Image (cartoon, rainbow, N blue to C red; front, side, top):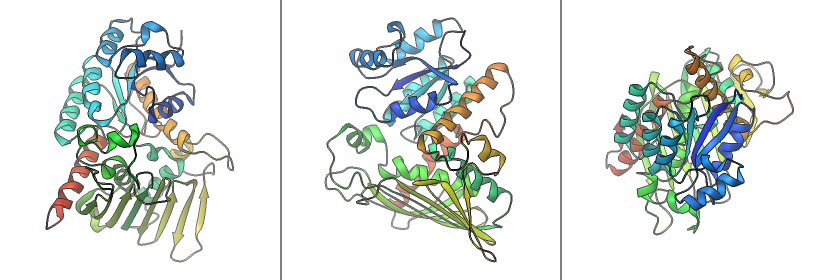
Length: 379
């Protein structure tokens, strides 16, 4: 009998991008097994993906409602233990609701829901069912991000004064006629925001996760540059944060020529740090009274960074490994939950329902602030 954590998936069928990434990440460490799925909006397309993944026909479902019902009826040692949700945003809550109610844990792509009202319903349901909920803010899975978080938490930079986070892409610089672009620009599927909901939420999550400071007020300027597009494709947000820190968040999907340029810089009274997603194995520490210091993944660093590192120094670890850390930490929490054991803060470090609620509140604050003549919007 397999001891792997059993996973089901909703979404990720023909033409999808992120579903395959989730499956690779889940499989990387050999701790998670995909046992079932409802991969598309039609039974035929779901069958195509399920068979490509070599699942048994009876575990390839025509829709997620049938999947939850049939999986719950299986013996406990055969049914899935958690579901991975990789659909467009408008389906995140309906799938999570049915999964939690049927007794399954949930790991969802972000944002968690379409709006704050939905995420509050989700939070209540997570509390009522006692099931685990995780959100794939994948960038928190990088070892050097966890190193940065622990360096700041230990006080090495002193009191935090300035946080600058940028997430620049160029893939929506022109109108795109493809599945990935179309649903992200549709408010009925994407929600209240385009760029800020898609990548600005990652930037905000990263800023708070690493700095340890919550954003308390925002002043946002969101823009739509491509004619006919109904949601923002660019934006800049001034941040007020706890303990008097100030920040700047910039996100854009019309920064022509940019690939996936996520950059984080944080400055305290004693020093600063800098991390770039396109060079994720490096973390620069900057000091007032000594030379800059370069830390590399695989070095003798903090416990949390070490727990999320697989390879010796000089062997690059990237996006899939960071994604796999989210899956690995969540699946470890699932094992602990099944045994009735408390989850360890290092090996079970993953974004949870509190991050889901936080993310939706921030995205809505960005949008509402941008719509106001006086743009400071208190959270």
